[in-house]
Amino acid sequence: MSSHRDLLVCWAVLIALTALSLTAGNAAGAVTTIGPMAAALVLAAGLFKAQQILWCYLGLARAPLSWRVFFLAFLLLLCGLILAAFVLGEHRGG
Image 1 (cartoon, helix red, strand yellow):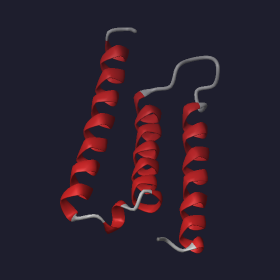
Image 2 (spheres, rainbow, N blue to C red; image 1 turned 90 degrees about the horizontal axis):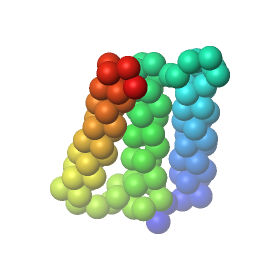
Image 3 (cartoon, rainbow, N blue to C red; image 1 turned 180 degrees about the vertical axis):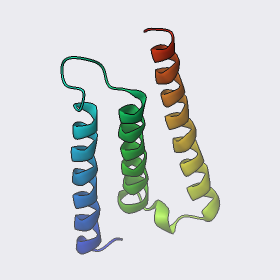
Image 4 (cartoon, one colour; image 1 turned 120 degrees about the vertical axis):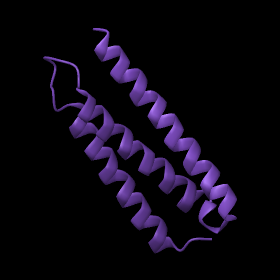
Protein backbone atom coordinates (compact mmCIF):
# COMPACT_ATOMS: atom_id res chain seq x y z
CA MET A 1 0.00 0.00 0.00
CA SER A 2 1.27 3.46 -0.86
CA SER A 3 1.87 5.93 1.89
CA HIS A 4 -0.47 8.85 2.47
CA ARG A 5 2.27 11.21 1.32
CA ASP A 6 2.74 9.32 -1.97
CA LEU A 7 -0.99 9.35 -2.63
CA LEU A 8 -1.20 13.06 -1.85
CA VAL A 9 1.67 13.83 -4.24
CA CYS A 10 0.00 11.72 -6.93
CA TRP A 11 -3.29 13.54 -6.34
CA ALA A 12 -1.53 16.93 -6.65
CA VAL A 13 0.05 15.82 -9.94
CA LEU A 14 -3.37 14.73 -11.22
CA ILE A 15 -4.86 18.13 -10.30
CA ALA A 16 -2.01 19.94 -12.07
CA LEU A 17 -2.47 17.80 -15.19
CA THR A 18 -6.21 18.51 -15.15
CA ALA A 19 -5.47 22.24 -15.03
CA LEU A 20 -3.03 21.83 -17.93
CA SER A 21 -5.66 19.97 -19.96
CA LEU A 22 -8.28 22.64 -19.26
CA THR A 23 -5.87 25.41 -20.23
CA ALA A 24 -4.77 23.69 -23.44
CA GLY A 25 -8.33 22.77 -24.38
CA ASN A 26 -9.61 26.30 -23.82
CA ALA A 27 -6.64 28.04 -25.44
CA ALA A 28 -8.57 28.64 -28.64
CA GLY A 29 -11.54 29.97 -26.73
CA ALA A 30 -15.07 29.87 -28.06
CA VAL A 31 -14.03 31.23 -31.46
CA THR A 32 -12.51 28.07 -32.98
CA THR A 33 -11.88 24.45 -32.15
CA ILE A 34 -8.58 23.40 -30.67
CA GLY A 35 -5.75 22.56 -33.02
CA PRO A 36 -3.76 19.36 -33.28
CA MET A 37 -1.02 20.58 -30.92
CA ALA A 38 -3.51 21.44 -28.18
CA ALA A 39 -5.27 18.11 -28.73
CA ALA A 40 -1.94 16.29 -28.46
CA LEU A 41 -1.18 18.16 -25.23
CA VAL A 42 -4.57 17.26 -23.75
CA LEU A 43 -4.07 13.61 -24.76
CA ALA A 44 -0.52 13.54 -23.35
CA ALA A 45 -1.79 14.92 -20.04
CA GLY A 46 -4.58 12.34 -20.06
CA LEU A 47 -2.10 9.57 -20.81
CA PHE A 48 0.10 10.58 -17.90
CA LYS A 49 -2.95 10.89 -15.63
CA ALA A 50 -4.08 7.37 -16.56
CA GLN A 51 -0.58 6.05 -15.92
CA GLN A 52 -0.46 7.74 -12.52
CA ILE A 53 -3.85 6.31 -11.52
CA LEU A 54 -2.80 2.83 -12.61
CA TRP A 55 0.57 3.02 -10.85
CA CYS A 56 -0.38 4.88 -7.65
CA TYR A 57 -3.97 3.99 -6.90
CA LEU A 58 -4.38 0.58 -8.55
CA GLY A 59 -0.96 -0.75 -7.51
CA LEU A 60 0.42 -1.46 -10.98
CA ALA A 61 3.80 -0.13 -9.85
CA ARG A 62 4.24 -3.36 -7.87
CA ALA A 63 2.91 -5.59 -10.67
CA PRO A 64 5.15 -7.65 -12.94
CA LEU A 65 6.89 -5.78 -15.75
CA SER A 66 4.76 -7.51 -18.39
CA TRP A 67 1.56 -6.00 -16.92
CA ARG A 68 3.06 -2.51 -16.76
CA VAL A 69 4.28 -2.74 -20.36
CA PHE A 70 0.92 -4.07 -21.55
CA PHE A 71 -1.11 -1.29 -19.92
CA LEU A 72 1.29 1.44 -21.02
CA ALA A 73 1.29 0.11 -24.60
CA PHE A 74 -2.52 0.01 -24.54
CA LEU A 75 -2.71 3.61 -23.32
CA LEU A 76 -0.24 4.75 -25.98
CA LEU A 77 -2.20 2.94 -28.70
CA LEU A 78 -5.48 4.42 -27.52
CA CYS A 79 -4.11 7.98 -27.42
CA GLY A 80 -2.48 7.48 -30.83
CA LEU A 81 -5.75 6.34 -32.35
CA ILE A 82 -7.66 9.25 -30.81
CA LEU A 83 -5.09 11.76 -32.07
CA ALA A 84 -5.08 10.17 -35.54
CA ALA A 85 -8.87 10.40 -35.68
CA PHE A 86 -8.72 14.04 -34.59
CA VAL A 87 -6.11 14.95 -37.20
CA LEU A 88 -7.97 13.05 -39.93
CA GLY A 89 -11.18 14.87 -39.00
CA GLU A 90 -9.37 18.21 -39.14
CA HIS A 91 -7.81 17.30 -42.47
CA ARG A 92 -11.17 16.42 -43.99
CA GLY A 93 -12.65 19.68 -42.78
CA GLY A 94 -14.70 18.07 -40.01
